[in-house]
Image 1 (cartoon, rainbow, N blue to C red):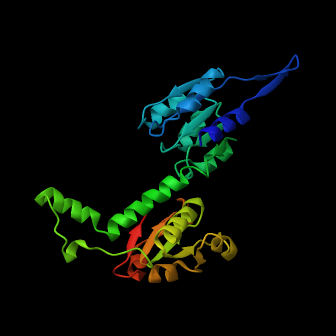
Image 2: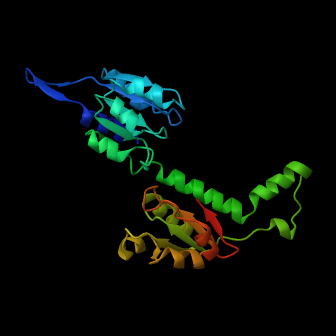
Image 3: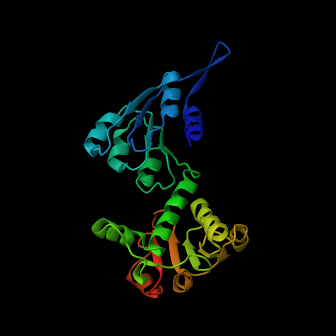
Length: 259
């Protein structure tokens, strides 16, 4: 991710020819979220002479509007980038999301102001998939309940209540088969010998079969036959309210949902 961010910054720099030499126009760059700090990016940008401003987490909309007024680039992750914020940024040329989902950014407002929006499609795909898989294992093996029992009594006897269920040869249904969904599929298939189903209207059968996913044409069918359902879809108008009471009612009473 770090190398990609540096690449995007360099691409967005104005390069002017002066006496046969390329000169990079220095920029003011704002970063809003500190959760995923990128020391190499910070070091590289400052070394090139760019003015990097690190804002505190949870900054208010009004404070962000003031800080971004003369910024050229915005680097963000979770902070809402509203129409008001974008319109306040008179010099803003690009918003770079260090992550995949861009639901926190008002895309129509960015387009209307001529602001480029860039994300990192490859960002943390294995990390996110491993996180989802760890939750799936915890649910199947009843780890939260066992941990609670350990805290109360100091021990959890090997009783039937704590046995849980195996993942091997169970069916996992993956909703959203992009990079993270495919990574999840590989872990399930090769690590736990699970049967892997996938629902994604934007992926074809051949592409999914290459990573061991059997394409299911409807979400209804996938939900009805899966022992585990793992959702890996970006938030947009198409996926808003993807799972509700009706969808939960379709699922097996013994199945688990990982979001």
